[in-house]
Length: 292
Image 1: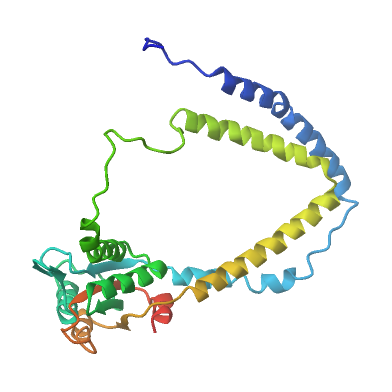
Image 2 (image 1 turned 180 degrees about the horizontal axis):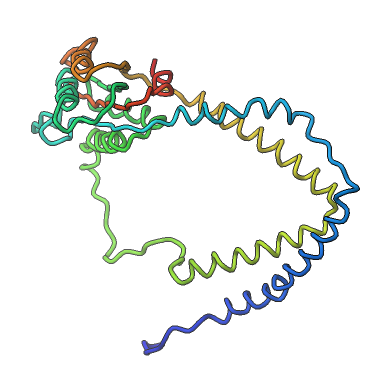
């Protein structure tokens, strides 16, 4: 075994798969045209009744618009103890009191670069100890994975266990290290995607051996299973809501909102704080109800 100079060559294994698939797929257009012609001839003699729930379902199509209303655009700003110029850095760690966090949010809200918007949603997590702070952030980001809070959660968790980790000195392997994973690089990625699409068509054609009745029965069973899956997923979302934090929401001018950010804050004794302020020109109904 030795290194040798070579050139790229299209793999015979890929060509074999493509040619075998094309032997069938190249005839799809012709057979489909014949089937459509037959169906057109029979269309006049066949009538279909709508689903028993079709009329009721049609009256609820406006629910899509209600879902769209929950999707609002805007800006967010996050302050954490680890932000430069925000937290207080000492030899024992980084600290940020609730009042200081609120003051920085108020300052940014009224600054020259403040985004437009009269609706706000505030989130504030604070704790007396770093371990408590890390646990509170972990619980919150499991539900609300705001990137800056996730980064703060990871860092606070790492710092809270840093003393214990320093006592352990793992032995490292020689570099470079083996990296696990599938060898799915170009052009293999594109080859697999293209050939996979062709095979999917073959699988679809193979499924045509079933009668239309069997297909409809399978489709009905699939729909029933999918609806149950979505119901369970929604229930899991509901039951997964845990963790506590401070929240505020409202609307108005930037100065008015900035003034209200200092109301109801916990004491400065809680030295570990992270806060997020969402700003939008549209009402943030979902977050307002999520954080009442």
